[in-house]
Image 1 (cartoon, rainbow, N blue to C red):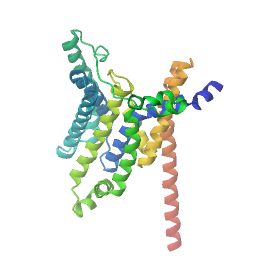
Image 2: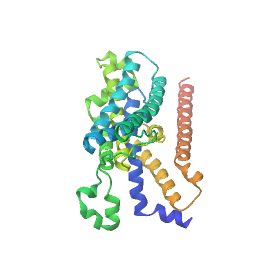
Image 3: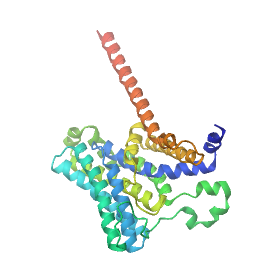
Image 4: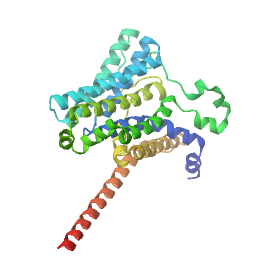
Length: 324
C-alpha cells in the first residue's frame, strides 16, 4: 500500500496522467460536440484507429510528422463525414452505421498496413508498422531543452504538444459551444431540431458540422497515440479508448469542463494501472483497472441521474397536489 501511495503522489505519476489522458480528452471533446448536436458518435473508436493508421503511413512516405498529423486528421474527418452522409442523407440508423464503421476501421487498417509493409519491406505485417520508419511529433522539451534541467517541474511540464493542445482545445470548445452563434445553433439543434428548423437554422448542416468536428478531435487523439505516445501503429491500437471517451462525455454531464475532468480521471486510472504493472502486481488485476473504473463511473452516473429524475417527479407531484 505504501508503494501505491508513493506512486500516486509523485511527479512522475502526474506527468503520466496528463500523457495518458490526452487520447481520451481529444475524442471526448469530439463526442461531446456530436452529442450536443443530436448525433451521438459511437464510431469514435474506429475514427481514432483510422486517423492513427493514416498519420503513421503518410509520415512514412513523406518523412514529415506534421504532414502525417494533418493527413491523419483529414482521413478521420472523412470517415466521420461518411457516417454523416449515411445517416443524414441516406437515413441509415446512426448506431448501426457507427458500429459498421468501427468494424471496417479495425479490419481495414490491418489490411492497409499489410499492403504497405508488403510493398516497402517485402514482408507483409498484419500486426503493425514497427518495421517502418515513421515520424514522431515533439514534446515541449524538444523546443525548450532547458526543461530537462528543471527537475520535478520540468518533468511535469515536459508534455507532448498535443497534450497542451488538448487542454487548450477544452477551453476553445467551451467558448465555441456557449459563446458563439454557431455553437448555440448547434446545441439548439441537439435539444429540439424541429424548433431549430422553425427559426431558420439548417439542421442538417449543423449535424454535419457536429460529426465532422467529432472526427477532427478523434483524429487528433488517434494521431497522438501513433505519433506522440509512440511512433508506430499496431493492430486495434486504440484499445477501447474511443468508448471510454464517450463514457467521459456522460460522466462529465455533457459539459466541456466536466468532460475534461472525467477524461483526466479515466487517465489517472489508466496511468495507475501502468505504474502498478511496474511494481509487479498481478497483470490481470492491473489491466482491468481503467475498464473497471469506467464501469463504476457509469453506474454511479446512472444512479445519480435516477435520483434526479425521481426528485423532479416528486416535486412535480407535490406541485400538482398543492394546485388541487
